[in-house]
Length: 516
Image (cartoon, rainbow, N blue to C red; front, top):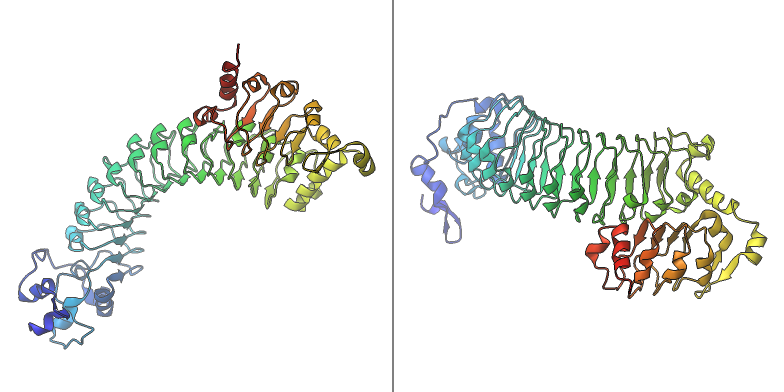
């Protein structure tokens, strides 16, 4: 028998051989329960001892058979029957169970025999009728993924906080009314789904879940989010759809890693600003009560691909929508919008939803033709508002240092400039009707603050990612500016902390530095 226990060259697997010589110290549990011969085929158990994985999903089980809990404790039935084992079938060399799937059954409880499977890394018990979990779950120290979704849990045992290696925890569609004390000890947790429960609060201690990448809190009864949420430095996906949120903590706007934010079906009346969310790709805030969309809401969304504003109370869309250079999908349906800025036509949208608005400037037949026809129409209106092609060529064109030609009349009509320069041409300072200048990602090295101050209608100036070595303090006197964007330039002052505070703070800082 000593020779039969060799599992490899010079290797003796004594742990399993001891089970043949005498009882396992874990074997003192009641061996009754569901009859394995009828509920779990021996072939499945045999395969599980080889693979370390056992799938008993959808077998109409009302309890877990003892042979499942004891799969790594008891000697297999084949061995008891003195059957011969080939080299590939030596049961004492076979692996411990690491993955157990018992989902889609009729389980109402689990026993403490769960501790007989300490090697488990995955436990999937979703879609059962569980109302509680055994305290023995704390002994599954290797567990990385736990799926208890679609059950009837009202509370989680505190022992779950002992699972320090847990990375994925799925608790959606239960009846949870609160979150266990000490939950923040799950410091390795990356994906947490608490959606479709009955939670009314999120504890501030949640902020200690520093590894969390995805957090789903949708379809609960949350009226607020903790300000400390901004400490989750790795969080990329936050879903708070279908709650009772009336406001969003301003601290959320400082979450630099956030890429997807879902706030649909809440009670929001104001759209938060996002000064630090430069990586935000999707913002879903449809089905709220938002009445106003302003430049301050848009100016920092440099990476936004999807903007969902459907089913709100918006009355207009600002010209600054053109700041969203990366935008691909824009949903404005079911608002109170009567007209759109023609500049919207210059965005490279793949999807634009406008139905359900009292639009007067675009015929229904054009909207029905789809996104590209609407964008084409808006662009045509920019051209239509200018003079004839012949006149524009002879009277309103000018040559810039880059040899580019710009239609001045179109700029005057549109009240916006979006072009490429190495320097700002003098003639632009004399177009006093300009309201928006977008010259980011160029090589502009300086601006004339005295001449810019004369442009009293100018409210938006985007100078991001240029070659500005200094910002003249006199620019602070341009008090009509509501949006001033300066990020991505090589100047040292104002510092980033000032830029993050917004336009008013930048202008005040510059005015304080004007020599007296």
